[in-house]
Image (cartoon, rainbow, N blue to C red; front, side):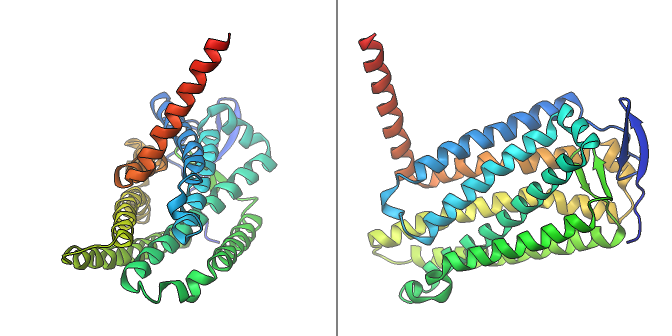
Amino acid sequence: MESSNASNIFSGGIHVRFCYQEESQLCMEPFFETFGIMFNALALAINFVHFLVIQRLENIQGTVFYKTLLITSAFDAFDGLIKVLTTICSVRKAMVINKMLRNSIVICWSLGSSLKYYILMVSTVDRWLSLAKPFEYGSLLVIRQFNLFVSLGAVGAGVMIGVSCIMYRDVLCFTQAFGAVAEPSGESVIYGCVLTGAHFLVENLFIVLIIRQLIQMNRRSILSGTDKQLRQAAKYLVATAILYSVCLSGFLVRNILVVGGFQALIVQTNFSCYVFLLNSSYGFLNIVAFAIYTSGYRNKVREIWFKMVRRGRVANDDI
């Protein structure tokens, strides 16, 4: 593999291998570290609560949409936990010293991100199929064998990430924004651009198809209860996919700048740190979008909240 501009520097008394010669700081600046921890801790907490609330929505239980919501919420919570750890300066210093910790966190982050891409793609295709082929929907192979497709995707991603991490375990380097990563080469950065760009294009292609189906649905004079529910779910998915594309675009722009030789500009402007914060915000903004577009969810949250308040009052009265 063609080496990047990696450099070895003593940072804070620790020998650190940085991915680029322009970098010399292991930890984020206080502003980015504070908001990075805050955003991802918020994503972790909100997705934990979201996971519990989703299980109480009886009207969607057993559907593919229900399963993708649960899986996405679990991955977003996991992603938030990993990002909190990698943002904390003391954890980064421990990662420099402890190879096992470093490799474990890189594997978890890579696997979680890959599976999140995959599940979001599956859920987008599912919503399009539910709108475009409502009568054949239940008999389609991808719907009937949803668990199998998700399992195959998870195994495939796990194998690829595992092999990659074994191959690059001795050439991990550090960036201020993302912590430990596989040492980038010209080929790997270009591959990252192509992969991110392909996901971006395919995801948005299905979003356009979903929007077209929604427009056709709105032209109908009468909508059944099922139609309204499908429309509601599709609108949420359009919103969250656009949100995710915006967050993902930061990585795409960064990789293009790296390929163009603007690494010094990226470091000087802390561009990668802003990309990290933008990407981290998806973890909780996704839940906000779901609450906006799903009235049943808002009602269920209020119901749970009032029950907790009543229990708290009863407990206080018993004291």
